[in-house]
Image 1 (cartoon, rainbow over the protein chains, first blue to last red):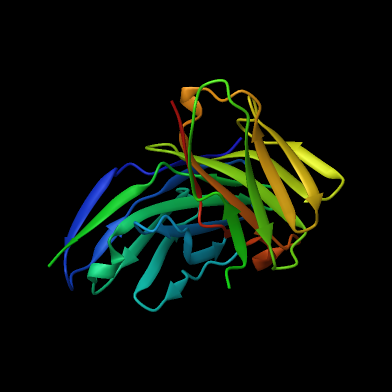
Image 2 (image 1 turned 180 degrees about the horizontal axis):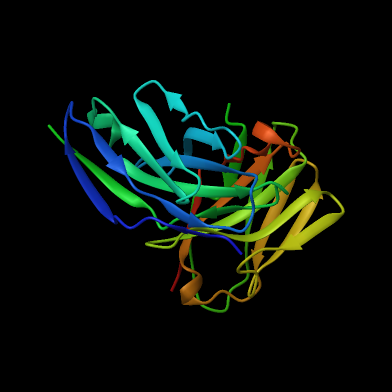
Length: 114
Length: 115
């Protein structure tokens, strides 16, 4: 079974600064997918960014980028130019290639200071 | 209009009561899921269904049952609610297959409190 660990329960960042959220996972599979989801106070789960394990290039979506280290089983999220609207819970998630389930980390609460 | 809807959005019930949470989707997806969210534990899978005739247990199915009434409808039941089932419940859907078809789309969540 896969496990996903987010070691930072809470993080804070100054508006316009950069912050990195950590995620590590454990799996014996070689082909899988990784996701970061954002959950604002509205409770809605919003997909931020995704990465296929077979791709060496790190995914980027506007101000959001990942640092995917497959050998180290690490998948961190970098948020550049942080905005007040980035304040939320962030969840890292692992998806196996069979496509039957997502395994989530415990989440990191990000606070953005004006 | 929301693609994945859940009813009710909030519910308070008492220990021992039967309760049903409902999920509907207009995305045309075959796969539907029920997750439970608890503080510090992220989301955990309760049940999932790949089509109307396919129901599978997830990581934490004890105390729950599901029904897939149609491709677009997937309900979660607590036969006899207990306080440790107090949580935020999410329904999700996906199109299945490989690659980005694995992406799951979530409903707005149901906050359930069992007194």
